[in-house]
Every structure is written in C-alpha cells, then in structure tokens.
Length: 217
Image (cartoon, rainbow, N blue to C red; front, side, top):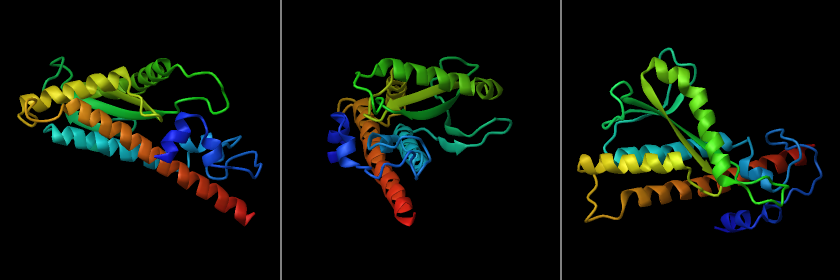
C-alpha cells in the first residue's frame, strides 16, 4: 500500500532511496538510477510480468477457457504469453488468440509533466501487434495486446478483452450476472492489483540487489 501511495504522488525517491551516487543501476545496469527507476528495474521486471500473465490465465480459466502460457509454437519466432482458442471468434479465419501482456512505466521518473497515459498504452498496443503479426498469420490467430501501466491503468484493448472474456463466461455458464459481482469488474481489479503488488515486490528486489552490489564494492 505504501508503495502505491508514494508512486502515485511521485515520491518513490523517498521510499526507495538510492543515495550512493552511482551512475548506473547495479541490479540491471541501467543509467541514472533513481528511486523511481526501481518501479521498472530490469532486474526483476520479468518476474513481475510473469505474475501478471498468470492473473490473466486465472481470468480465462474462470471463464472456462483452456489456455496455455509461455507457449513456444512451431514456426513461431518467439514465445507467446497466452495462447488459446476463442469460443466466439470475430472471424472464422482467426479462431486462435495470441495474447501478450506488457506493463509500461506510467511516467518519466525525472519529468514534472503529467503523462499521456492513453498515448503510452496505444503505442504499446501497436507495437505488440507489429511484433506478433507474422506469427499470428502462420497460426491463423488474432493478436491481442494487453497493455497496462505501473499505476494499474488499463488500455482500451485490455478492457475490450476482459469484456469478451466475460461474454464467453456467460455463454458457457461459468458466470451468472444476476447472482455474482460483475465478472469484468472483478478481474479488472484483480489484474490492476496484481500489477501494483508485483511492481512493489520487483522494486524492492531491485533496490536490495543494487545495495548488495554496492556493499561488495
């Protein structure tokens, strides 16, 4: 909770102090380490990403999907975060879905300007589509970008994805709107909180790794 509050008010330098004056992060080798840097430190960024991917998998399973994570498909150039068959495909030629999660830094650590969150997420979506277009064509799949920010902001693409998963859950009798809390609200919250928790944990590990490296010098 304290991490989320400090991050929201741009005060991570006070929480994740890095007073040693090093020119680069000794956890991931990025230049100019600040407290805010550790919210997206490369040292444990993949672990954060993987934890958030698992939360998406849980949402799909709750809706009755049979999905695979970190799938290395034949002839594909790279691993796919989440791969599954869409029970309600928008096109008969794209019955599979290749979904990829990305978590963008919500702001520039040393900038006083408010971030354009919509633009940040839109660019991330376009990059994911570009990255997976060739692999998707081989597998006759659609590319589903799932971008978020470290604040837990949800992109338009991710919102639409959650809504489609909810509709599939209703169609498959895995969710009953009149009896249960709104499926897409629950899982949107679950994903956002997973991002915040994992970001805090990753930042803490990055700071500890940096400080441990400094202590050995």
